[in-house]
Length: 106
Image (cartoon, rainbow, N blue to C red; front, side, top):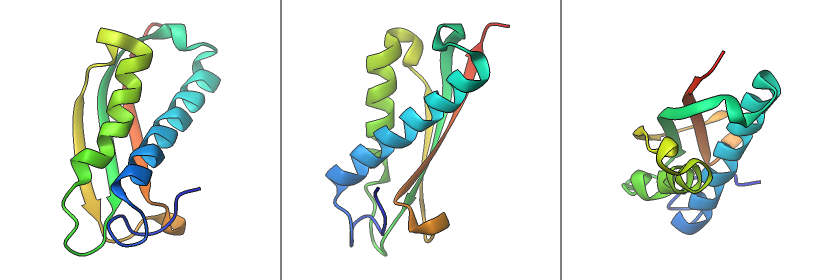
């Protein structure tokens, strides 16, 4: 849905939305494995990769999309450590890639 380099092809605002969508996709994958999101005890860490145009330095603003969404869904349990990295390329020219580390009940 969001392809291209942030800061050239995609605005920070659209990339923020892309980060939210990527985090939702992570939660959908977690739900398919866990059966329910109720087993998530907390979000431990979010790793975010932003397909950045040369000179683009607002990766953290982009990744706020994922962080804000997780805080909205999980409240205090959604607070997490985070890495926001600018990269020169992502698969299929996607704008943002997110992965989550979750603590879950067994």
